[in-house]
Amino acid sequence: MRVAFVGKGGSGKTTLSALFARQVARSGAPVLAVDGDINQHLSEALDPTAGTLPFAAPPLAAHLGEIKDLLRGTNPRITSREAMVKTTPPGRGSRLLRLLGDDELHTRHVQRVGGVPLMVTGEFDEGDLGVACYHSKLGAVELYLSHLVDGPGEYLVMDMTAGADAFASGLFARFDMTFLVAEPTRKGVSVYRQYRDHAREFGIPLAVVGNKVTGEDDLLFLKEQVGDDLLTHLVLSPWVRSAERGNPQGELEDTNRHALTILRETVDARGKDWPTLHRHAVDFHLRNAHSWANQATGQDLASQVDPEFTPGPPSLT
Ligand SMILES: Nc1ncnc2c1ncn2[C@@H]1O[C@H](COP(=O)(O)OP(=O)(O)OP(=O)(O)O)[C@@H](O)[C@H]1O
Ligand SMILES: [Mg+2]
Image (tube, rainbow, N blue to C red; front, side, top):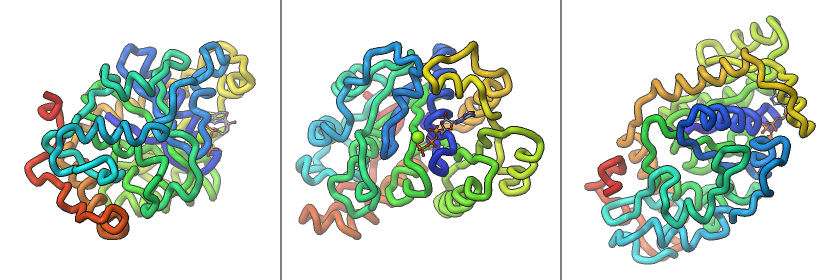
């Protein structure tokens, strides 16, 4: 199952991604954390004591060409790595990957940090967000997600860039669950409204997680503003504070651990919907092809869509 954490800048996306990934990893379930933010801080959040070696695995974006070659496999509809754009969907012959499998991609790009396998996209700038950018740093992770066959009880946790920027790419449609982290402030909930509207338009599952809640007033405000979309909340955490200073004291508070459990139960309660994920991927690809990619590659990229194919566990063999 793929989980994205989104929200306003500073709301706690990185903190919650790390807390959630650590809690899942400690339970013994397979989990892969992915840093997909403009500025990459997930590694520090996963290991506040800096007890592991500095993150040395290369970012996905640094090996885009090799990643394309690996994933296109023997798919005859993708004639070269140049013809493979970030939205090119898998088809028959494509190489589909298991979460944390022993393929070249996971072997090269994953490093354990604070007990959690981590992969990073590479830092990027605003220009990388738009649909029209051919060399988008997020292209590699988009392709990875469209070629990943993850199962129930396996988790991919992605820390996303702030605001509603993820909607500029098809990335947002590649998750089974999106958690929008919102502080109990007016600005915190305004990003929620933007996201909610996009999410409804595309039928993307979205739930709000309140963060840094300090009392009843905060909670009331969130309930008023967010209504039924408010799934749970974390309180302002002395443990997170102490961890941020590099010296975590004791354990994360019970109430915050409980909130993380609710997130996991929510993810688990959602079945995997391969046809819908794939349909979104194809829709975005066609849109992308039309708006810039056909011109950029000099090919009709609509022909990359394999009408007989939907990714899922059977496509792993
Ligand atoms: N529940 C919490 N209790 C205490 N502090 C918190 C909590 N959640 C986040 N913080 C603190 O708030 C600050 C911002 O958190 P974080 O970096 O996770 O936000 P972000 O949404 O990833 O920000 P950015 O948009 O810059 O990536 C950090 O100093 C973090 O330690
Ligand atoms: Mg962050």
